[in-house]
Image (cartoon, rainbow, N blue to C red; front, side, top):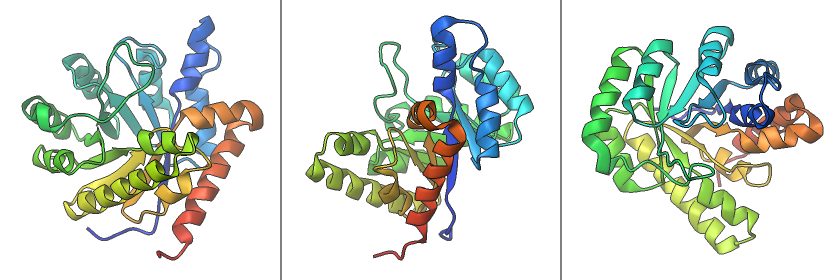
Length: 253
């Protein structure tokens, strides 16, 4: 698989729904946010339909699948309920993620190695329906090997530990995690997997990840929705894309 000079931005609109659900009703509408994201240059839309429906709901997924003109990346737990929903709406891709009811946000990558039989079966059914298979994993060699073994198309590398080190000013940990992500991206690419990354990325730490040539898509949501409160969603997305593209254009050291 040849390296691409391009990098895509997938915008996660979950937390537009979080704000809506805090009060109930229909405003703000995450589907409207997805349309604004498309106008601002997003390359795709990501939405996580959680089992407890804490933000995105079933109607949101139906509308996103039917009304937006961008590829839809449906994040979901590897359960029969979620598989049936995916097979009904047929998004461009399904990103299988770990999910715990008590967590505030996704706390780490999926343990693909420990769940191979279940994931292999689910991946086959989704693939037969024309849906691309993505696995949200930690930057770990065993998980990359397992992702290839079950027939995934894509791995999305979990950048949460890296982003937290940046927020906390922990330079040594930041450098360590960046090296882990770079190594994992190279390994996944060499295994024939498309490489994405995401979780916790903001303006201050996106450039180093965007500069990794094997990574062709970043999925970013919470930061963009938060920044939109101050500058608007279009401007927030535009600045993120500018930083990503500038990082990609720099010569590799």
